[in-house]
Image (cartoon, rainbow, N blue to C red; front, side):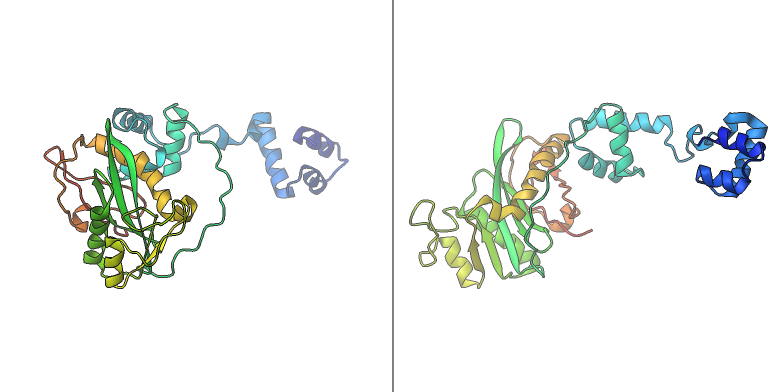
Length: 301
């Protein structure tokens, strides 16, 4: 029943205020307030004024325009999460949801399709250092040039202990990743890798790796007491493969932002010089316009 009808029945004396309020689904006190507003301003007095007034927390138009201009000028094509991390880094105070809604309302980014149901993931290791992953990703990190990104990361925390580019993945890059990790954190218990020929010797193509015939890298790990574990499918390396999708999306944009286009001379850089959060924001360091990145140590915020 609408208020006008309930009000008419009440004025005729057929219902009490309590009964009329019950029919409207409100308390009698609220019904009396409706009566006062209706008798003072008519039906307009019953409108929810919150729907007609601008919120005091609403962002000024200048701020909305500045955000859109910032995105269009420097970060065009970046996903919202990546852009928002740099927006906050530059002093922005608004939330991720506000930034996403603002960019979507102006047509600068499109709404992503709903994600499917995740399969059950393996529980991470209980403590850091128990299990590390090492893997490489070949990608066009700068226009027209493909390099390998070698990452050594912890299974328990996803923390990246070593991260650098090489022209080709191999024994040398594998040793470099382990060396960087040991110098930062010390020895670890085990290392999870694919079945690349620099990690394992595989007698039959597609078969099991040989635990007796070790590669140079395998012998070295055995001598220092690090157990090696071979992965037999991309799904088995899911914890190390997932970050690469983030790197392939964000790192080329950040290299382009800093105008890094050449590999240059790879020189080790300390973790404190390249500190970044575990939230997968990659920050590349350039020196005189040339690429000088070798190790990007990720530390917890």
